[in-house]
Image 1 (cartoon, rainbow, N blue to C red):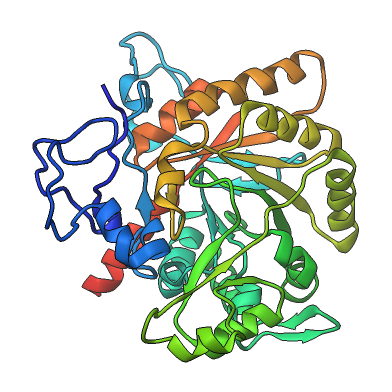
Image 2: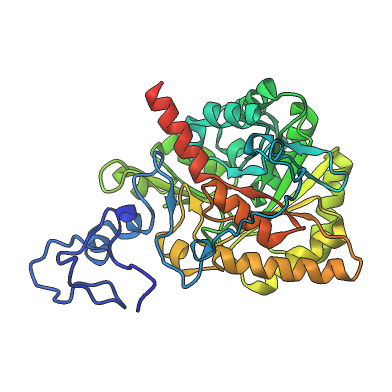
Length: 417
C-alpha cells in the first residue's frame, strides 16, 4: 500500500480526472488520456511550472502534509486508572479535573513559567501570520503560553531601517513584541524571537534584545515541514528588489529587465528564499555565547526534518553550549509556504523523532551531562496530543509546539468578530 497521495491535493488545487481509479505509486489516473486538460499536478505543472510546487493560495492558508505514516500518535491511547492519583491527593473531593495544575517551567533556571505546556513556534514573515498576529499574541499572552516570532520578519518589513547593514528600527517586530507584552499577566508566558542566516546578518536578535526587551531568542536549523530556509511570495516588483538589496534570494531576478517586463503578465509573484545554515560545533557555541553576551537571558534552538545524526548533533551541541530549550519539529507539521512534496516526503515523522529525541537526551542525562528542556512539535492540535507527547517524553519534554491550530482559531475568531 502507498502511504503517500501524490499528484492530486487540495493543497495544490489539483485533482485526478478519475479519482477512484489511480495508480498508487505515481498518483496518476489509471488511464491517462490524450486531450485531458490537466487537472493533476503533472498536468498543471506543464503550464504553471514552479508555481505548482507550493500550497496555494499563498498568504491566506497554512498547510500540513497528508501522507499517512505507518505509526503516529493516533495509534496510542491514554490509559487511566481507578486506583490512586498522581499530582493531586487521592481524594474524590480533590481529584477533580478543574483542580489540575497544568503549569510547566522551562530553561536552565526554570524561570520561564507557562500556565499551559504550549509554545506557538516560529510564525514568521508569511502573510497569514502577520494578518492574525493580534489574535495569536493576545490569546497566547492571556493564556500564559509561549509565542515565537519566526524568521525574516525584520527583513521583510518595508519600513525597517538599517545602519551599516544592521536593523535599528522595525515597526513590525516592535508591534509583535509589544502586543504580547502588553497583554502578558503575572509573568506567565514568554515571547521568543527567532533567527536564520539572513536575520543573523541583519542583527535581528541583537535588535530585539537591546531595543525591544526580548529575553528569549531562538536559533533555527530548519523545521518539520522542510529542510530548507523560509520562503514567501512577493507580488510587488519594488518590494522584490528591496528584499534582493537586503540580501535575500529572490527568484526570478527582479533586476533583470526581461523579467520585469513580463511581471504581472507571464507571472504575478516572485519567490523570496532564505539560505540554509551550515552547522558546526564551534560556530554554534560561539553564537550562543555571543547572544548571552548581547543580553539574551534564554537561548533556544529549533531543529526539524533532518536525518537522525543531525538531531543527535542538536542535542549534543545544546548540551555543550548550555542552551535552555530545544524544539524538535517532526515531519508532517505545518507551514505557511513549503514545497508540497518536501513536506510529505522528507524528514522524520513526529512520533519517530519523538522516540529518537528521548533516546538521545536520556543517554546524555544518564551520564550526568546537562540536557535542555525539550519542546515537541509537528502536527499537534488537541489536548490528547499534548498529553501523549509529554507522557512519552517524560521527564525531558516540558511542552508541545502548536502553530496551525492556534492560527485556525485566530482566523475563525477574527472572521466571526
